[in-house]
Length: 158
Ligand code: PNS
Image 1 (cartoon, rainbow, N blue to C red):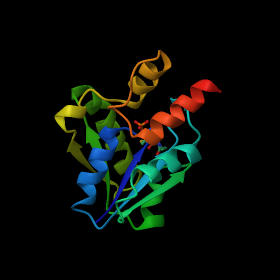
Image 2: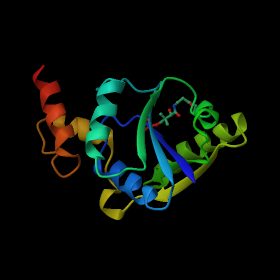
Image 3: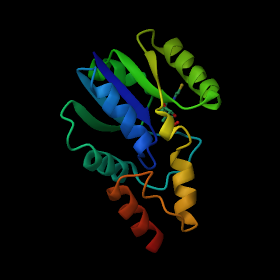
Image 4: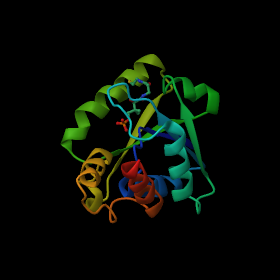
């Protein structure tokens, strides 16, 4: 089974990486798609996010990182994908994810979405909280890989 894991990944966190590693264990291939979420202004460019994800996943050989500036459902035919995989943290994620899953399937009947429950230790983690904690000088070491922490430190200095 070929899966696609879409998101903003601005930046990738240990919560995302946990979902990717667990999903990679039961699938033939996972495409991690760095996509545009039109309601967010990103901290990192798409290329910077792709590079950080690649460097965080060196040990997985059935994972490919891509970037796409269009509709997620259009990638289904391009890459011969069977399903979208998403992580669910809390009830608060559900409404948004449910809406996107239904809309994606409305646009393309092949676009099934599978949900994986986040590991409890990452249930509170989000990229936006990581950005905020970092912005105000907090320690993000336990939330993101060191390549991300270094890139965020560099951004702050600029
Ligand atoms: O990590 P995010 O920001 O919650 O991910 C949302 C994302 C990027 C997966 C979503 O905005 C998306 O799919 N964007 C691509 C454009 C698209 O297909 N929009 C229609 C969604 S129903």
